Image (cartoon, rainbow, N blue to C red; front, side):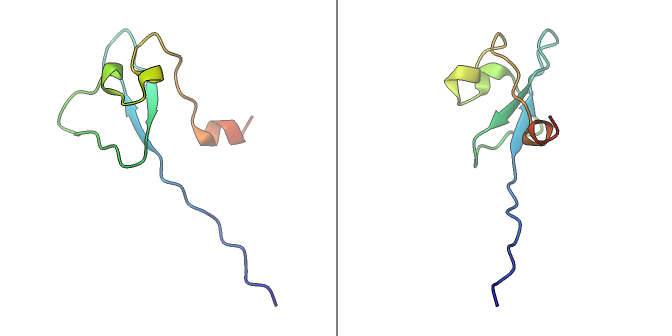
Length: 67
């Protein structure tokens, strides 16, 4: 008898840019923590490709599954 296949749970870490002209959501790398009591902006993103408000908004994994 085979062992049951268990789902893999992946916790994603997201932050929203607080620039009123941006407000884009950014998916952050595992282990990166956002201080909840401090504003967060795209330029704080450790992913250089997404560290600017002109970069396209990240799409959630859930949104991708429903396409």
